[in-house]
Length: 358
Image (tube, rainbow, N blue to C red; front, side, top):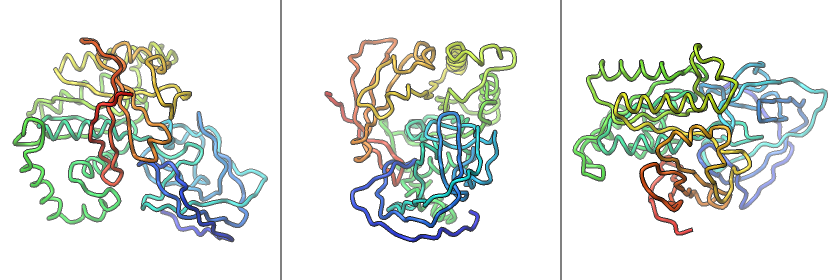
């Protein structure tokens, strides 16, 4: 991180205040008020932010970067996913800035919805499948490979994510954790050996169905294994091939092309394919989600064999809770049942499935 110094003129201690972060909600210890700084204006496709020149955001590789060092066309992490910077400039105004002091060690929080996209559910699915003895390929079109591996290690080894960087330097500690996992007899069917997880990073907007097809083919051939599952983070950030470039500007046709392509891969490799898409912004944080709340990617829902909604309102965020609601089941009946889950931010683990009658 580049060196900079904030000059504070006041500190306000607060109680029972929370701020949303990329690992859940965090307690705010205090708010620091600074001297006046020149205001910078930052705009992406869906987000706007007024901040100081040394306000830190995260680029496409989850590396820190000052707002003053951004350029139009750069990609940064936001609550909506990876977005392109459309405007960044210094204004003719100045004002006092406010900095939050958090209880956790991440020191990352959303300001104007800008920070990072949360893919915890997909990685928990991959981790649990591997613990059941299944071989899993994770395709990330957003988060860096190193970041994905860090999250998976925290989940599978039950390592506090804030301590991972330091603990991972101890090779003996890591070996012991791997041996514990191998000998745990983990899984619903008491699997003797956990499966393997392979992570592949593609550039955002460059990953096509053909790219994934080629990667899976080479992976199975080179490793001499049979894959059981592919987890894609996530379908909206994929691209169509040059031959189908006419689909790129039609969200429905693009979604249909990508969803049918993933279905083709599932059939070809005889694997389960799991991915995610976003609901309409109007139901973010809502108490309920319906199938019609997926407007931009309606074709994805139509093509999928099963479709679930991840529900998390403000109260649930405070208590680290999720509800998973079934919206579609191709080969069976359902009554939109929901399951309640706990989220453990220190290990990034989602577990304790309980049927919810609500």
